[in-house]
Length: 133
Image (cartoon, rainbow, N blue to C red):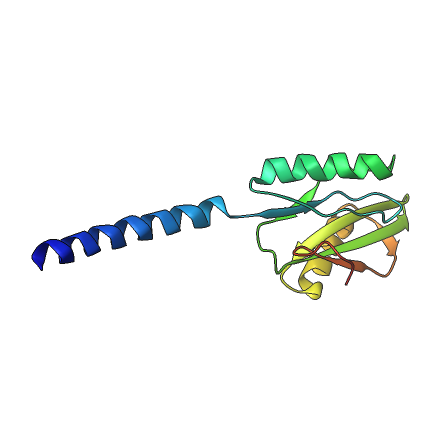
C-alpha cells in the first residue's frame, strides 16, 4: 500500500509539473499591424516577437502603408481598436485593451500625445478570432 501511495504522489507531481509547463508553452500572442486602408490581419504565435513579425509581414502582403510596428497582446479576450486621424496628416494606429473602451483610450492617447486630431470612428477586431467586432 505504501509503495502504491508513493507512486501516486510521484505521478501527481510529475503530471502537475507537465501541466504547468504546457500552460507556459501554450501561451499565445495575437498581433496586428496598422495600415491606412483598414486591411487588418490578426496573426498568432507563442512568442510576442514572432507574432509581431508575422503581423508586419501579413500587413505588407495587403498594403504599402503598414506602420511596421505591430500591436500585440497575450490576452486573447482583448480587443484591438483601429483609428485613423486626419490632422496634421493622415495616419492610422491600433490600441489594445480588455474592452473596446480600453483599446480606444489607448489609441486615442497615442494620437493625442502626437498632436493628432480629426479622428475617425474606430473599428474593432477580436484578438481571439481576428474577426471584426
